[in-house]
Image 1 (cartoon, rainbow, N blue to C red):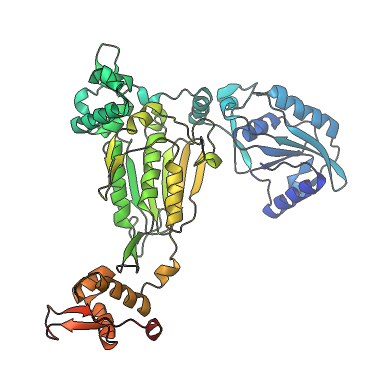
Image 2: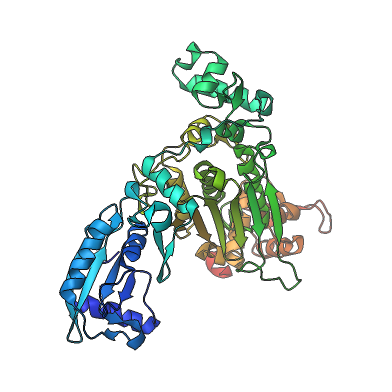
Length: 510
């Protein structure tokens, strides 16, 4: 968060607040005319737990942001330093300045964001459960128990929710074919080390199964999600919910009165949910056609490789704590964007800026991530591979797929209790804008015909994605130019066409 260190920066910040009519998410105004504000520790906690921020003492919001009278800058400066050092845990070292605004002294305290491993920062007198705050909008708000638990989980790197035993599950709840393929892949990748143990030991070593305490080996949450027949038998909301909306805001009805264009609860193991989610997205988006080469190249609104990675990441890195198990992964398709969200924000010290960078990966669900590396996966186009690579490449794949589709980088919305990635709808490229131009299609028809001995009007229509009548119109133009000639009687349904050898004059049909 940009700090305020001189009078000019202070004036600019106050002018922004005057225009907004309130203090902002990154700035908190405190009057302090009657003594040091008692709520300072709460604001210090809130800024430290969010992204840092600046407390400005000696300015009153209710008077159009003018300095207050009877303000003791020296005492305020000392009180702020003491609060940051002794009033909150962990202790902080804010950057404090006495500046001037409209001829009066003002104390500015730049509060740093606390390191991820030290959050939550809380008010000492109130304790961690009652004294942890977070900055939302222009206010300080008490953190929920769920938010505090996620901070502690990150702080201690103690997330082990994926390795808990599923009490009612047995080995029969694992998909035998998927399990056999996983075991084979695991043994093949271990350079012989996995061959030294039997299947049950291998499964236990990888935390697919664990002892339930009574001598019975049962699947873990990770095992049942990655390799189970139907995980939702035990965890009904650990699934994907797909929704396609007719408008850019939820709840807005279509002209026909529909709230949704399509909805689906997508269940099954993680590899099955990924495939089914891609099918749901694919059937609800347009697959445009760029006239190119042999007539047409399909270009979807959103590159499915990027969608696949985003869904896989959401299922692999989501929060599987008991508090988070009631919330599914959400895939929301709007006319102008695609949003994929999951409970639980980025884990550990990983930041949004580090995504896609070297070393930019942490695993909240370490056992699940490790298992998924060897789970076989067949995409909707028949391409085979593994569910994840788990090498920190997922976001890079997303970014590269969008770049290849000439799309903008995704928007990332990350906070403590959730992560959301937003793909903006693909804009029409210059090449697509030429799709239905006469010259462009005529060139593509010739390219299509040049790779064949002869072609029919139906074949050209199917390849170009146009009607048969339209295809005949293009054929007739090329016949008039002497570039194509017909084979067979004029009105025969079996009539075909072939190149004459005459070259196409680009300028005559532009």
